[in-house]
Image 1 (cartoon, rainbow, N blue to C red):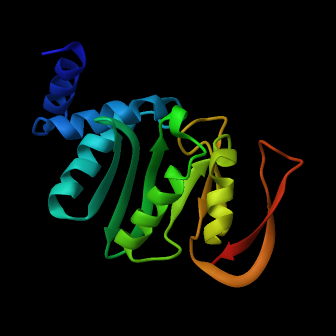
Image 2 (cartoon, rainbow, N blue to C red; image 1 turned 180 degrees about the horizontal axis):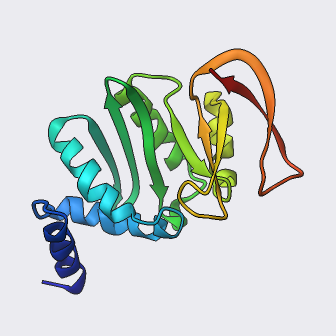
Length: 182
């Protein structure tokens, strides 16, 4: 057993969870580079995503090239919430349309054209074109939700017809037009 597998097994045991299957562990390893923006992503994945995969309320889309995981998307479809939780594409595959294909698949699975999603303001430039393509509406900014100095931008939350401007605190010169949450 390698060091990562040992760590995963110990972490699952500490959370009182069953060990991860190999493909679940591989997906977690692919997500871990996001842990700087989302501290505790491994606990969320093991305690929320994996059980949801087993009950059918979560969906994990894997994109592989030459037997290697290079893209991943996670969505949630529960009675009270449809959400795109995570999208990650390996750096060497960025800007090749893979993110758009992941979003297409996740949107079909949640059966919603405007599901809830959030993104750190520092990561917005990586997703802005996709959000514009789908017509997603900025609806909130939560300072310090995951990282103290970062603003987590919410999209498609209770969208209504009135429009307003949200000024992003970390980028004061940028004003984004958004629909106001109800």
